[in-house]
Image (cartoon, rainbow, N blue to C red; front, side, top):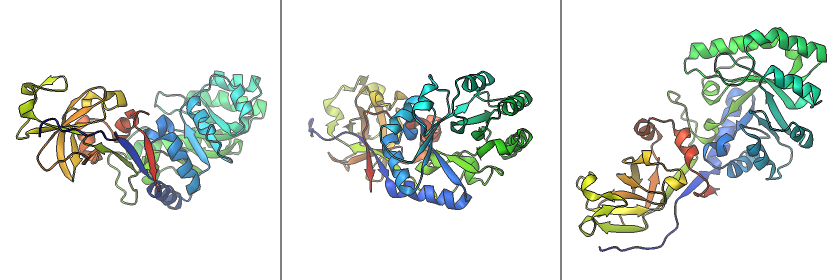
Length: 355
């Protein structure tokens, strides 16, 4: 075969709607609590504009994002009767007055005082407590002054929150206890809802005292390292066809790399696929194993728009290549968690919902 080629579609991310709705209902039934669905970072690379409508169809009406721009993207979907919590401070508090279904986390005393001055509706605001994560939020030494401000101004918040950051169960329980103690000290009557659990803590059954759970990756079918729950169903597939095959005997280079510098083992051919670092598939993936017809093959070169896979005679033009099929193996190879590299895949790779 000498340079046989065929124009074909590129790579796509496919989302299984049924699995996302299943995960949402499973977690809701398991916890007996309402879910705040975290869809930040383009729903961890799954596609914010695709995932939000799926979750709404499944019964979700409460979402959380990191940035104001992500909240505006959800608003552009024109979905009625949903609330959107923004973790980071917005640039202009007037957006909270414009959109009554937007909510924001208060991360410092200065922000709290400014929000009082700007007369923002506190039913759209959540207090965040930090117990050692070094992110945003009030530390324990702030609690007395915060309590005084709340009482003096007769404030009533939509919610209070913290973030679990430790993989150690005992440390997580300690954080939750400190959080609930702080809420009780201030007065839990000042807060409509209380939320702390991330996906891992939720599936471990941690977070006593919270009214809501805050889940992201578990809704999409991904589990934190060390968490096992066979009820969670994966929803995400990244795949595309082989659209060019060449024999090594016809080549001196694979992409920009000389063949003599590539360990080709017993392979005699190379297949070209339409995904590269311009799509967020970084060169760190060089030599990662992909799957073709349920068999593993190495991706040996990654350029901006294309990558190259070593293949054998069983692979044909149009055969589909699946990348990141085995999250555990990919995590170990890349020394990253799955939600880190799925998030990197950008909008050049289209997302499609499978119903």
